Structure formats: C-alpha cells, structure tokens
Image: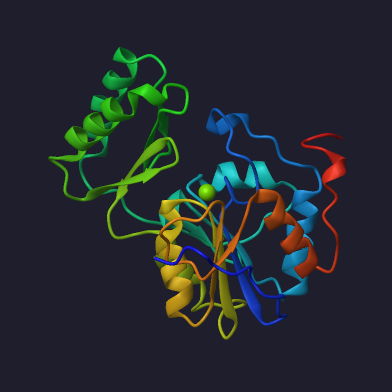
Amino acid sequence: MTHNLPKPPESDPAWAWFLDVDGTLIDIAPTPSAVNIPQQLPPLLARLSQCHGGALAVVSGRSLDNLRLLLTPFDPPAAGLHGLECRDAGGGVVRAAAPPGLDDIRTRLTRTMEECPGLLLEDKGLALALHFRQAPEREETARRAVAAAVADHPGFTVLAGKMVFEIKPAGVNKGSAIRSFMTQPPFSRRRPVFVGDDVTDEDGFIAANDLGGLSVLVGPPRDTAAMFRLDDIESCRVWLALAAGTVWNSQMGEGAD
Ligand SMILES: [Mg+2]
C-alpha cells in the first residue's frame, strides 16, 4: 500500500534473480507475438546469470516455448504461464495438470472473440488469455464474457492484467513458482529478488518478501506489495546491467542487428 517506494539497492552476488518479461524487460506490444527484443538483452541476462551462479529465472505469463524463442540464445530456467509450467536449471520441465472445463471455456471465448472485433483470444495450452489492447472500449464486454465462461468451472481463476484477462488453473501463480525454484539449486540459500510490473506479479512480490528477499515494481506508483520501485523498463535495464557489471546501451536500438 506504499506509494513512495525507494529505488532498489545495489545488487549482491548472493541474490537469486526472478524476472518478469513483458512490461519489465521489454515493452508490451499490441499483440503478444509482435514484440521487439533489443539485441543486447539476451547477452545481458546471460551475464547477470553468470555473475550470480546461474541463479536467474524468468517468470512470465508466456509459455516456456515462447520464452525460449524470445530470449534465444539465452535459455535460462523459467516459469511459464504464470507458474503452470516450470523448467529447472537442469532442463527438467514440470507442467501442472489442467482441471476439467478448459475446452468449454475456450469454446465460449472463441465465440466472444468472433462476435467482438478487436478482442484476441490467445490459446496457451494450459491457460487462455483474452486481450483487449486493440479494442480498449471492449474491456467490460471481455470482463463479463470471461466471468461467465469460468463461472461453471471452479478449477479456474481469472487474472486481470494489462489489457488482458488471463484464465488459468487456480492455486498456481508466480509466487508459487518462485517458492519452488528457491528450494532447488542454484537458487536455494540465496536471497530472492523478484522484478515485475503487473498486478499479476503481486503474488511474486509477496513470495520474495516472505522469503526474506526483495521485490521491485517497474512502472508508475500504485498499491503494491513491492518494497522498491523503478520508473520504467529502461531504468530496469540500466539497474540490471549495473548488477551484471556492465552498462546498458540504449543507443543500440530495439531489435536492430
Ligand atoms: Mg509483465
């Protein structure tokens, strides 16, 4: 509930890094597939990981496959789909089981998308996302359609993100993913630091706080469990570069090569 949050402190070699991607490391694009990755971002993350004994994981609403494509050639441990699928440091993948009802929800929301131009239903396998970034005036329509679609399926929950409603199995979130990583090497016995931007990152902030770590909100002040705040994505990249013993060069441009 704090508004005037301080900037995060200088990094420590004993930290374990957990990083959200969209809105934290990269700009949010009009559609999830249209992102532009600055070419120096994957090597920066690889270097940051190296400086911290390999204890860096990305924690995202994207799928593991999608994250791998996005960050290539860097391929860190990752939690995808808000923690529904996790790849550990050894490459082992654990996926949550989908509760019954996903097909029904998908069918209903596909109909909604067809009836409402501008709404985009993204099928993530174990989860769905109804985006209204292209039609912000349809937020209420999207909210009602999602609420109606999940009403009969108590195994699912809705997360209201930035211009998107995420529909996912209940009980698993970014916080549970971070807690799980922290029981395993190379994360265990380190101090977790979670950096995120969205309300869907609040579970991650709470987990990092509970584990004696640090939580960093990227973006404008708002009600949050985070302890620290950085103004924007660029400030976040600069801070991470400093922690990796290097300098972020914004002059290199987005996605140029
Ligand atoms: Mg985000």
